[in-house]
Image (tube, rainbow over all chains, first blue to last red; front, side):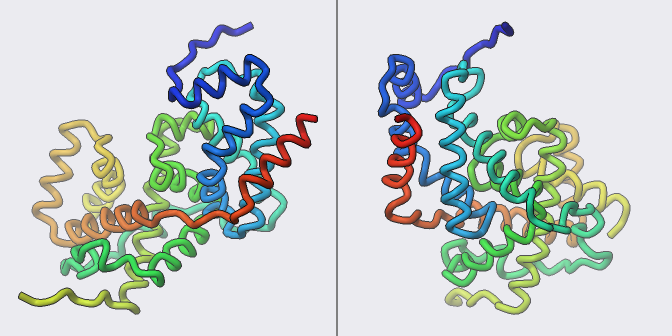
Length: 207
Length: 77
């Protein structure tokens, strides 16, 4: 059997793992307390539909029940859960006819004659910009990303995993993670520029 | 956009994430300094990432955790 070198776990996760290994039937329920809401939000951003997100969380925990016994601590428990969740998300999408598979770099690179004028939306305070309408728009824009780009963007920019962690969670090389993240961000930048062309931010008070 | 700008554009995510080596980061910063178009691109690119990072989460359904725990118990029994 291949020897794995365990990584240090978050103390609360380690306590749950210890209790699970001692046969405590409630340990997986405690994992649900800790992670279900976060995984639900991750699923919602991936699937876009609350029921699908809830199903994804359930599928993830079904695999926790099946495989936690063989978890050897080779990665952080949180990262392992996101690996299961990512896999559940991709499985959910597999049956769907989604023609958007790639984001060619050319399609997301700025146009030949970009503007030299820095637009207001890149300098106004974030709290002034992020109203309910913009939040709804950002959530919708994430769903326009092809799934494999959406997955990387979700893990890197919204869940806060590092490049190395995201690569490990998804079984990709760090370079592939970087490439997909850059294209996803570039796509969302163009989308946001279009949005602000139609919805100019409210100017702050002039001194 | 010039070939040089395109090359630099490919690296701006890595600059933002602190993943470029020092020499490459310095070259890119120097380019941004002298190229207004790329500076605008950098400002909007980094702002886009910042806005998404502040997006926040949606409240899950009230019964999410209790339903899930029921499911876990049913599976275990």
